[in-house]
Amino acid sequence: MKKILIVLLSLCFLFTAAFLTFASGEKESKAEKPEKAAAAKEEVKMEEVTVEMWAGPESRAMLKVIDEWNAKYAEKLGIKVSLVTIGRVGYPEKVVSQLMSGVDKPDLIQAFSIQVGAVAPYLEPLEPFLASKNFASPEGAPYKKEEMIATALKSGEVEGIQRAIPTDISWHIMYYRKDLMDLVANPIETWDQWIPRAKEFTKSYNSKSPVPYGTSVTGKLVWHAPLHYLAVLWSYGGSMFKEGTMEPAFDSAAALKAAQLFYDLGQSGVLLPDFESGEFPEMVAAFQNEMIAFCPYWNAMYPMFMDCGQSAKICDKMAATVVPGARQADGSIKRAVYMHCITLGLNQSSKLKDKAFKFLAYATFGEGAQLYAKEGGAPPVYTVFTGPDAVEPYKSGAEMIAKYGRLAYPFPDLQAFLEITKDYYQDLLLGSRKPKDAMAALQKETTAFMKERGYID
Image (tube, rainbow, N blue to C red; front, side, top):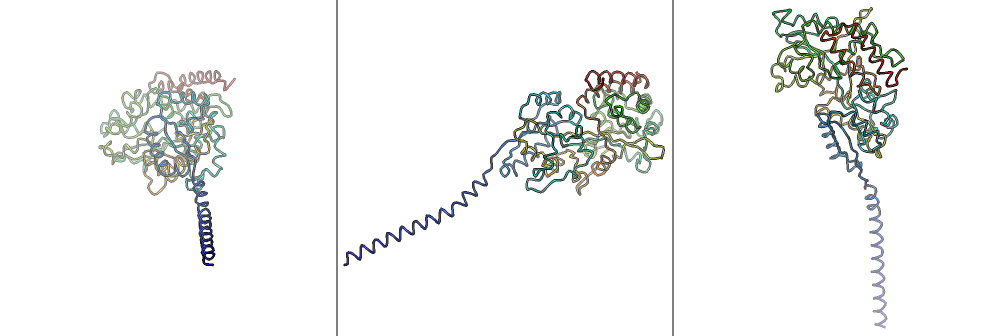
């Protein structure tokens, strides 16, 4: 009997132990399943988006944005971003060659707005992406297109289709020495007042002038020199092309009037000596060395002038305002602020379009734009231009760009077209061609160019 009892107790113990082990194991397996499911859910496939830009301050600023993205969002979103830079010389041609070949890298590519027309056929239309859930911060907060200055956003638009988004904007403002003149109380309202006011600050006209020359312009043979001419042409009511066509319009009254202004400016003696060989560095140096009183030029000079380390003589003497315009019959002033942008577009052959756009949105509308601005860039979003930390020329620049900003029409051969106009622009300044002759010759050459390229019959 005792043996039977022992056997029964042993069997009972083994059964209980087995049950407990089974129950324990079942409990563990139930507890592990959600953890394994969560781990599987959290595992995100990492893919690399590449951004290509030209070497220089723009790509250095973007690298900071990329580093921040990779540190904060790469693992969470499965999007690692890398930067590729190539030289500035011949950059547009290199980009077109790359995209034409159909390569899927880079995913995002820098295009100057002057060249957007040339690369547009190889860039993905962005409207579907701008309407998608990817047009949001990494945390999912939606962005809005209205957060960007509308005229700036159009710099990436070709024939009504958004092909790129600007990361940087450049525009013309009127710089002046506020210790010498007050362009708020006594503004230069029209282009016709440019030369008379410059004579007041040119020693050959006024021996008491505190500076030797009144003003200056870019006279060097570079494609962006005649952009000053375009702004004046537009304010006089002219245009690059005849309405509804691609036929040049340099035979118009407005074109001749603008040509006369630059011819007179060049012959007036108010410009810096050797202006025909000067561009951005020379214009900066002219102010830094107290050689001129005022001039219309690029916004990029402003931070340099405010930095006493770079501009010790003038860092507390500089100010800027809107460029002049043309007085209309009703007494109003018609202004055209020339502007262009550096943009990023999405490679049509990219295999990572959604992920690439996610970073593009962050870099142009979101946190990345703020960081890019801190690194010296000028992203045209209102939070940068009008936010609590905004400084000049951004504060006043937002209104200037929104009200008066104007872009050159982005057709594929725009830069080549401007390369033609630069020669005639310099001829006007040097006085080697009379305005009427210069415009007639420019009209003839640009018309032949547009026919050759198939824009007109």
